[in-house]
Length: 194
Image (cartoon, rainbow, N blue to C red):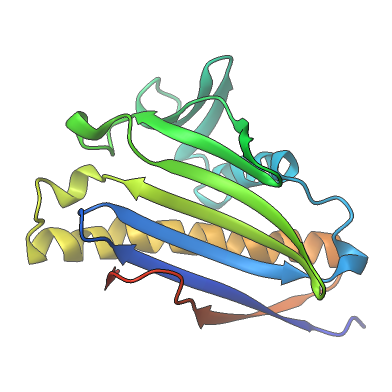
């Protein structure tokens, strides 16, 4: 019988002063399990996880010019991203948002989704970060309270659920043991909690 390992996943989701969304989730994986970790590995696992956890309602498609999150089996793009960029910094792969139905039409080329690995004395920190995202649901700035609540209860909740599940799954796969997740609030930036 396997011992259940406890794993902390740190989360923060904010609405920033400029009415963009910032969301970060990270965990530290002990070095003994972290040998395979690299941003490209994380991206591939994340795309497969999205397809699985949404029962293919959201279907990630990799194309020569980037990645799209499509609705069901249609060509309808919910979110479109540029090709992954490794040039930003060591251990970080960024995908720039470049369109999709869930993005404000005037802000299609703003924001990014990134996957990072950072070696620390206690292990490898694995980070999924969404920054400068302008969701269509929040509408024009400043968003109304109703729009904020709608975003919190739909996209913000789904993003956190998927990402926390993804980080837990990566840890479970690498460790080969059952994992119990403990969520911890992060305090990386200041803004309105989502």
